[in-house]
Length: 285
Image (tube, rainbow, N blue to C red; front, side, top):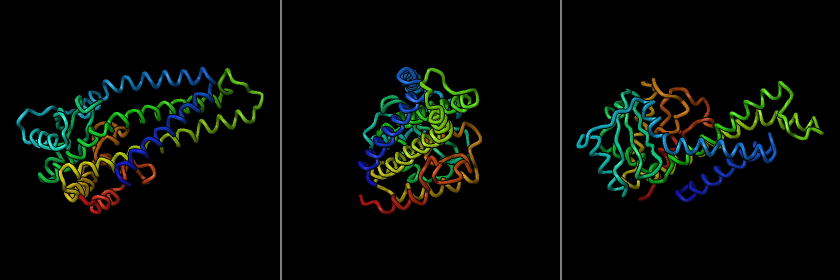
């Protein structure tokens, strides 16, 4: 699937996730429930929009690098090729070989690399990884994934409330003339809805990774460099799984930094490395 196809897929998936949220709000409280759900999501998105980058950088103990350092110069060169403003550059004190981008827009962005990835990759491979991360910034993936994670989180929270409601007699304020129907709706909300929301969120994350791979390879005009880097990173993560942070941030990284976090590809925050490498090798610049 090309860049346009991935963009359309993301729009469809975000639409489905939003539709699921609206249905949940309508189900638990009619029009008033829908309004409350929308207000909660709006507030959470505003908070994440302004502070998500600071929160995640603090979570991983990231330290900003000095201008003129080797990593800073690599980012500067790739940002120039990508026609992007210079982002802030950070190093994370971890042997786990990984990198991520964050920020609400290209003019308010940051790129972070672990010490492990700097030790593992050669300059050609590192620049390909940086191009992948800068592509996330250029494509505004950091904002998209934040919105998706927020909506999915609200749905999961409401589902948790539904499980308690099932125990104590259901949500108040609804027309319960059909008790059997209400019970079925409650069970669907409590069990099936959070699963669907999670799958939609993960599908969005995987779609954006394919797009960033393609865009990044085009920036450095070297798909093989990114493919080689991904294979090295996958092996390195198995040897040095991330020992800090939280698995809910896994989708930010170029590969999942938490060993064994995704038992099934269906529940993975990233496409398989095999599929990503195959797509990169098939690219024609």
